Length: 287
Image 1 (cartoon, one colour):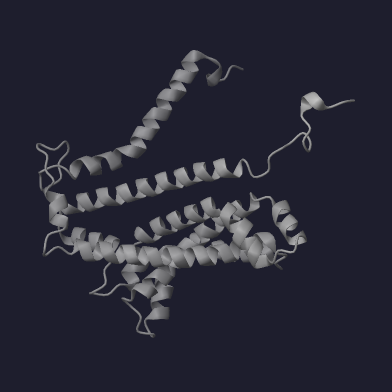
Image 2 (cartoon, rainbow, N blue to C red):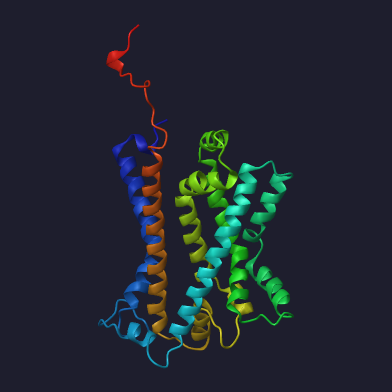
C-alpha cells in the first residue's frame, strides 16, 4: 500500500494540512496582537485605524496595570527561585540516589499537574488564611511553586539523565568531594536544563490565575486576576495590549530556552573528545 508520503501529491496534501493546522492554532494570537494596535474601543478586526493608545493607557497615572504587572513579575521571580531549588534537589534525589519507593515519590511530585487547579487553590486558601498570609507575595509564590516545581523536576531529571556519570565517578576517584563534583561538573553541565526549568517556572507563575485569585487581596492583585476583574463587567481594550505583552514575554522566554539549549549542546559536544591514541595518528599506526 502506498502511503501519502511516497507521492508528490501526498506530500503536498500533508504540507497543506500542516500549514492549515498551524494557522488555526496561531490565529487567536495573531488576532490579539493586531487588535491591540487598533483604535476601535470594541476591538474590531481588522482595525479601521492604528494607534498605540492602548499601550499608553496601560502606564497612565491612574492605571492599575503597572502594579499588577510588577507584582506578577515579583511573584514569578520568587516562584522561579523556589521551583529551581526544589526541582534540582528532587531531581538529584530521584536520579542520582537509591531512593526507596522512587516511583511512588515521583508520582507524588507530579500529582499537582493532574489535580484540578481550583482544588489546589482551595487547599492553599485554607492553609494560608488562618496564618493571615492572604495577599502576601510570598504566599502567592509558594502557591505557584506547587504547580511550577513538578515541571522543573521533569526538566531537570531529563537533564541529569543526559549527563555522563563517568565524569562524576572520575572526579570522585581523584578525591573530589560531592560539593566539588556538583559545583565543577554537575551544575555547569546541567546549566541549560536549569535555565529551561527557570523559564518554564516563570511562565507558569506569570500566567497562573486560580491560585492567584484565591490568595490575592484587594491591594495585591496579579496580572491575570486584574485581567479577569476588568473583563468581568466591561470590555476594556487595554486588555488586548496586556495580552500582547504576555504573548511577547512567552515568545522571548521560549526563544531564550532554545538559545541556551543550542549553546549548551555545543559546549557539551567537546567534553569527551574521541582520540585514536595518545600522540598517535592514523598515519603513524603500525601493524
